[in-house]
Length: 388
Image (cartoon, rainbow, N blue to C red; front, side, top):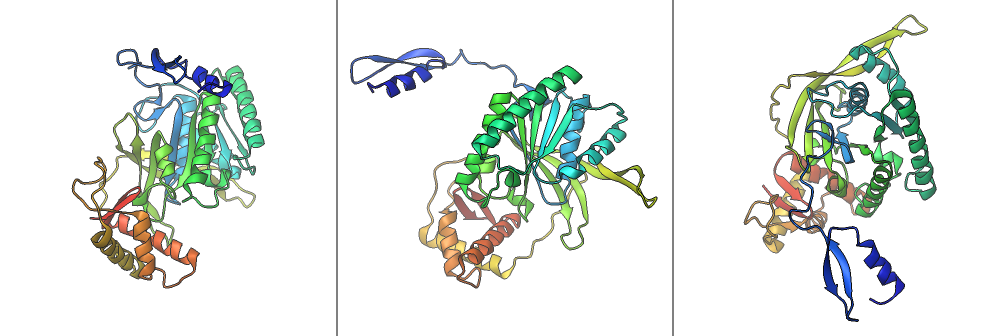
């Protein structure tokens, strides 16, 4: 390490704690700095919503289609903008929000009006939005977006006396043009952009994302979504995919780096009438109305033919290749596992799709994977899978 690039690397490390000498081959000592025990900060983390939503970082808002994610999104923004308790949790800092809507921008004002009506708020709130069709992975688009958000932050301070505190991305898949949400490289690229936006603005980033067909699998696609998140809020419901009916809606804290995970509360979607349309009929939107959550009944999940084949393939793979993985709090001690990739190969060989077409096999395995996890017959902690 003798060149300018090496020196630049060493210089980049100077801001991290106390100096500790690191000897180099040329006899010099690199002033690499570390934070030693007793010198770090043990202060409480800055929060927007007490015990729930941090002031910075990435907080996913995920859930099944039809569970009410966008209504919860509006409810979060309205509570933060008006200093109104959120599901009984205190607002720690009143802030403004912006929604970058790659989907559903046309209905935001109506939903916001309904939320304000339910909260008895008559004045404008520090909430803004814009429809986006640009791909946020484009460096020029990122630069323009950050510049626009900084200008919006100035406007919020001038007109409302608050900072821009939250940027919603609705949805992450559409905003970043993710062609394959299972591709960890694509997902990690999107996550880096979210961090960049949040770091430059000093705001919380809230990407909205769908869950898989089986809610037990969590955020749809690569585990890099959850792995890169600081917090995951889950919007859940018992939904009949044939009729579209949903009930037993609830909000849960599915991941928190420093908090206690678990249920937050149940809610209903209540229709708020905003007036009459040109035919004299009422129009409006739904609002989130927190309620006391009722215990959910476990429902048996019937496995499809593909699910049965995938389960048999996993057992065979474990019998032939299974090994005990490194010690982990997420995998039971002494349980033999295989990698998801090994399981997939065995499922392919046993005909999980009934077709050799790559896309058909991939989708059939993904459906079987989600169904088995939801039925609690298989557990997965990337990259390992095991039979329950």
